[in-house]
Image (cartoon, rainbow, N blue to C red; front, side, top):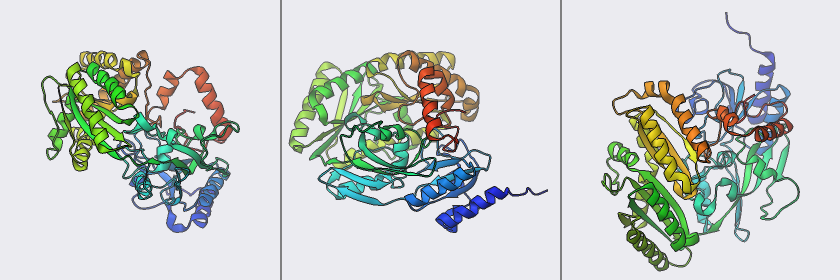
Length: 480
């Protein structure tokens, strides 16, 4: 017997069609792009995918949903890795896609800011800044498809946090639609503003649970006069940390990137992407490689002089077994392409258990040694794909099934055990179980385990105050 449509939902859909246009309220056909998460681990069912074209339309959609207490799942490029922007399986939630909000509203070169709408693709934001002769430095592997609203909603990190900070540090103002459908215009672009609670920082990183970001005023920087890239083979994680210390000493603020990669992670790139040339692949006395980037505002000659002095000191100190410096922009891009291909190569190897963790840099060598040994003892043959942003203490400490094992069975049988072992070790070493990917749905249960009761109490109070009906991205970050 066919189900009888809920009259209130039918009325809501009619209202939404009147608000944004029938063509932008999707209820039929293939909605996989909006209903399935980036890693294809979860597939939900939306009541509708709604695609507003302006902030006013976003506010009207929220008011309509609030009137019927319909849950809203804000979504940008849907590239998140913590299942934070896909609907549940109930068929009752509205996916609010912000991808039509793509305008670059203003570039203020004198103030070194740009104001863009939430649906702008990160790569397009970078390009708009570059066309104005300026730099927007946020950079990550998904930059061709992720949106600035999602970057801010999750406080994305990426490869240049070491110099420029996370997304939070690159944002001076927000425009936000509240859970009641009101619009807060906080796009002033001020670097100093002590007029009450900092709502901007409260909303950044809240993953759409406290309000819906519709636009942002972002910091811009002068384009560097020169950018040099090197790839170094290092004998141990301890020496990688020592190399980081030398890089800070020789390059100062010019150090913009410092990525570490284990040899097994690079072996996967060599195996599944043989067209890429991986430097020092399989070098016996170098189980780790480091990718360094130095940006200089003076000249290429000045940058190269400092870079070469760093590498000479590192070789003399035994921090580096060998190193190559890119001789062109194309070579530098090839080196970065190898680093950014690790997640894709790992996916080709089969399903795996991902971790986005941070640990104080000084404790990373001990953490890695301890956790590697622990996992290999508990699950013989397990393979560790360890890489990440060593410069800011963020590792992607991923776990692959044994070589002859079934990846699906490994995930089914060992994911909970592996997560428990890794997160307990992270806590013991003073770290965080989520560095730059957010909490989402995937890690919401971990928040209750690793945050203090006092912190959880404040978070729940904020959520209740700003979203009393609980309609904004329910079940994400906080359970219940």
